[in-house]
Image (cartoon, rainbow, N blue to C red; front, top):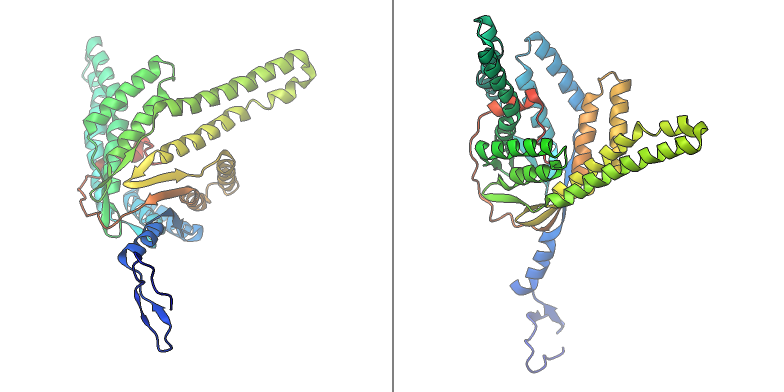
Length: 377
């Protein structure tokens, strides 16, 4: 057995039956790098959902919704959400959804009272009582304001409700953004986007994303967003240049070789679609690549090519099945979204503690009625 050199610590171990040296277990210092290596790695989400299972659930939901004259719609939505989340796995554990049909039903009724009733009164009330022109004008203006404000309120309330009803490993998510702050951001974004003929929209989209992410929590830990609108503006500008370049190409072809004009014109319908797919893929990567959680950063691997294949497949399924393939489309889309999402970095779950807050389902139903898009990606 080799003796340790002066100044060198003796290796920890013991002498075996044959006189050989048996290495002892690694010390805490020796195990720490290995532990860090296990933690500091790329993590992925897995999805196990089945189109056949969701189809059976969907058929039952449709029939029960028709039989109950729409009342079962709220319980049908809960069943679909619960199934999709229960089939989503991260680090060996699956997510859970805790919302109920009763909550969504009550939320729907509240949404009607909060927004539907005032809108109907302002829209038709003055005419029924024979009000003058000024009253009609003011009522129409207030009714238009309600239409404009509904998406802003619904976005915050719906995200707050859905996250509060979602958990992983027994710890719930939550959203703590204030409606007033988002309404201010929303109105400013809409006005500046209109004034600048759309040029401000990328900056507004980045600010909206930052608001949604930075006010979202898992337990007592907050998500963060460090994206800048300038980067997203470049994406939209590149899409604009692509459309303009193809349009100029078609014009030159028409002028120089008129007999090729019909073939060049065939390109025009596909140009906005390709530009939209490019913008969608780049924007999704921008949103996720700038989203962090503690010392981890998300990464999206979405590309124009694989996104195009997903969209074409989904549209073909819906077209040839006359809409009956919706469950498979939903499964394909969710599987695609999770398959192209990564979480890189050191993930310390021991410091995360339960700190969820309750939320009403009213905004969730408003969001469903006006189709507000607030999904993360």
